[in-house]
Image (tube, rainbow, N blue to C red; front, top):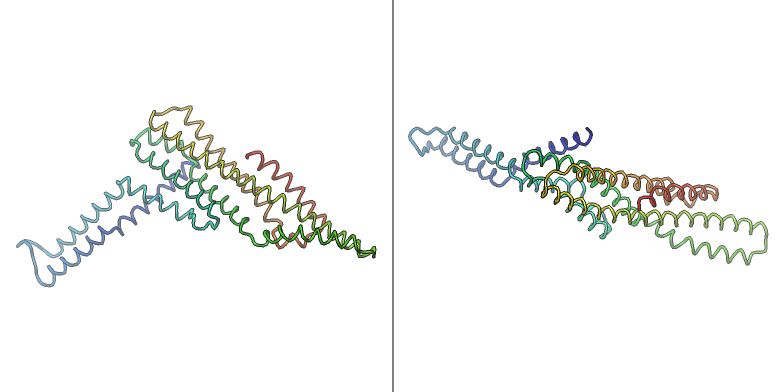
Length: 307
């Protein structure tokens, strides 16, 4: 039911976008301009192409021409595909992603989605199209999760504090170890040991965060491959006709991919947000170790299980 409601909402958005597109098309502008000019000539200068002509006849003709433009736009499959493509690129804009590789992968995901929609639009109206629409229910959620995951990875990869810590913490550990060897005062040595333990725990958190992001990156690439497989399956269903078993497996594959990406995104949120870059340095050794242990448990279970 939720999938059908989402599809209905999406179709309503597309219909409204198509209507707006029809109104602002160049053809509509030409019709509006001619109606104003010819109506003005007829009203002001009494210009009539025929003896029975009235100035407001131009308004009627203009309205009929505009209705024809709107109708042809709403029934034009190529116009529908263009509007859908624009809608998705506005909602999931790859330009929001700074990393070039992630941006290209998001473009690839959008391209697969466009191709799948083209197959559905080209299918004959009736049972086949409805079957394909039902089979690909969840595709929009999948694309949305791909976009959200790419934004998370992009944020992590572009985080300047994390990058600085990754370089600074190992150097700080080396410096503290050197100072510990040279220091004779036991109270100072205790202070250095505490600082050293904190830096080591911080490094453990950073390493596990790196591992989590690596696993998420592999999952991201894997789901793009799966999206390409779905496109191939949709082509087969469209070419061979309705096959209940194949369609059911495809729906389940899409649902699994959506859930898998959601699990990965939740894991990254747990690993990255609770201890942001500004917080890690101020945490105690016990807090850092507990964070590292929790991260190992969550990320090792959820992310690697779907890699």
